Length: 443
Image (cartoon, rainbow, N blue to C red; front, side, top):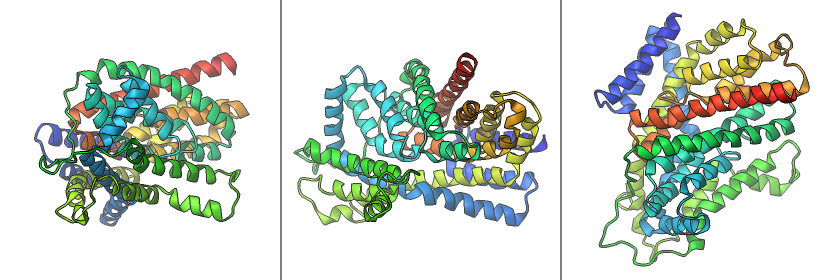
């Protein structure tokens, strides 16, 4: 109980420091994480270890992705390539369907790609589409974020659902089948939530600073504009397929190559190299510390640091024993399909990582499936999906994805809570409601 109260106190300190006193999120997160470690009784060595693992772990996984994504976005914005992409997408889907398009783009891309990566790559397009279509930028931002969230927790081959299915020995094909159906339906209330709430948030897209005297007079072609974005996505998707247990591409040299070039960092790096072809006349000074690359680093640095601080806070929570406490407290109750949901929901809310919440929950309930009446082949599938539904929410101050969404878009923390955080709650409860209904009607 004391540990739970300590967590609530830490979250309150973070939010008050940022929202009321305008303290930089990095400092608020980092200092509060250490304070939480001390109050929760962690040893000095474990606190230091949590700082190192939390910061290094998060930055090792998405720090370079953020930096490379900002590089790519800067070149797309400054050369007009993002505008070209926006115009083409609007030609295809129409000016009245931008929010739906962003929601579906985030959803589809986050099946083979991490949600963070999807948001980072889609953010420049989201900005441009917002400006071009006059749809509020907050709406396009939250549409991409919620779309990515839905498939990230419910549809393999993202790591969380695959690991959970493996631990619970569920049929992966059925997890994918029902996961697609349930996650797609969750987009419906999410869309109306965005229309109702996010549309009212005043947020202007902050494009890269453009020197009006040196602005590109001629936009790049549509093919050149799309290629830096499309190629990395295709490579990442192909690499994901290549890693599938059935080995559809075999285990030869092609698989080895596609696995390497399809890793998110390498794929995005290739995209950055392709973006260098976008300026009408390329000047190597663009790559200098005073050029576009230097400017992009200045833009990316605060985002990377804040994301890393969020990782420290999440790791501090994990190492304090919160997972064991929450798991033991809920495992004693026989709540059927709602048990994995509640455990995952509590863990996600407490420590920030959807993947950690799913894997921990699966490990807790695996030996309980028989007593819960979920040891049949079909119910194991829905135990996986209930776990994923719980791991959707609540995305807030201790979730690195929350900070990526708010910092890259410019949303205030309070606005992020009102839109992204609340949106994940709606999506999570919609998913578990559907799962309960399906199990009652068909199983």
